[in-house]
Length: 470
Image (cartoon, rainbow, N blue to C red):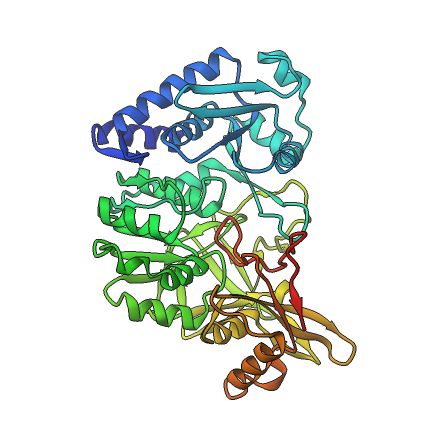
């Protein structure tokens, strides 16, 4: 594959420049290139070529090398975070029709054929049936299968041609010290890995994704770029970790994966006026597109290059891009007849820019009036004592739906449910129309943030730790 050779040739030229820092040890591009070749030799010896293979591991230099080695063997790769529960991993393996399972760590590659057979016999025994996967293997085109988080049901599997994702990096950009905040099985994490390494930057892998660890890493290594979610930005501000560590090296923060509450963006820019804040836009189905925010304090952005175009049809954003997936393995085709991807995001166009309002599936319909959860959450986050809040729909016999707010309070706050309801009504009545003010309040002791540092739109209650409803 031409794009694969392009990147490995760059790695060779980058030589002793650090490519990744993991567990406070630097790994050079020369090491990365050598590791890729060693892993390819091992894969060839095991008969793994033109196969559907899972890569189940934690984020590390070995994982990065394994991704490139598998693509170099014309494999279709299912990147899977090794910390997932076994049942979820098995679900992904079944949907993706994985023939072999690969792990990568300091000991090298671990390889298991799913049917117990090895080499060519293993490939033939685990026959790939889905036409999208078969097409990639027959054409010797490497691929990536990226799974949605599946928080509302069975995960959707988006199939990408790896050559189209890698083609975005033909032009060399600016090298930067970057924290890969999203995991490599997430489109944002994969994009950060590819962008940083293609441009000769350095990935600084976190020990954990707490605000304190992120700020410690920024201070210690002079991190310049940080791609995160709005939820994490809010958590960092609440933690105060930025006042303990010197994060002055940070030049740009890009945010995506969920709607940014205006109050969070305003608070962030007030705290960090010298950091450029950029809204990213990407989906498992699209890849991550190049964008330009109107300004650091604006929720408006435009698409920049990559052959991407957009249109808004009946209030929904549709995008056409060369990096788009070729289809789902287990869900209806989301493309229009003329090739535009229906994103599911409600959006408006303003002076040539786009503004995302929210996922259509999450919009609350109160007696025919639309309520966007992010709008209400943004107001509630200003109320003293609220640590996290998620707004969702609750059935109403009068208006069809009503607004429900699930709230996690600070540890030092323990108001009664009635008192909290009165505080929320008093606080919101001059900031929101009456139909947008939450009619049902749930107090929870559980976190409302997922492992991907996004809001959990359908919070689950753990047994023995009940919510308080009202």
